[in-house]
Image 1 (cartoon, rainbow, N blue to C red):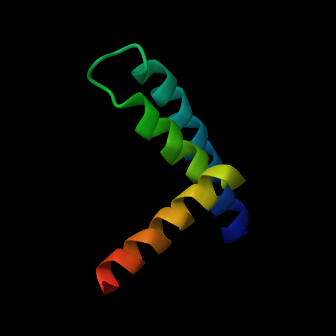
Image 2 (image 1 turned 30 degrees about the vertical axis):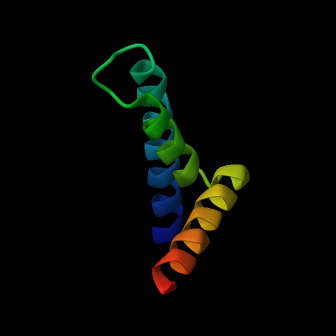
Amino acid sequence: MKTILKNSVKKALGIALILLGIIGLFVPILQGILLILAGLLLLEYKPVTKFVHSLKEKWKKRRKS
């Protein structure tokens, strides 16, 4: 039951962030692209997830150097 509720909240928050991001593309105060990426990340959209994972790997390599 908790996982169903958790997934539903996660999806609702992801969709809300995407909608705010679309609004943010036209309103100069909001960061539209970042909100859209955060929403897609919450919805576990594969290209965005791969992109964030690759950024994490690059960051780890730089910190070790």
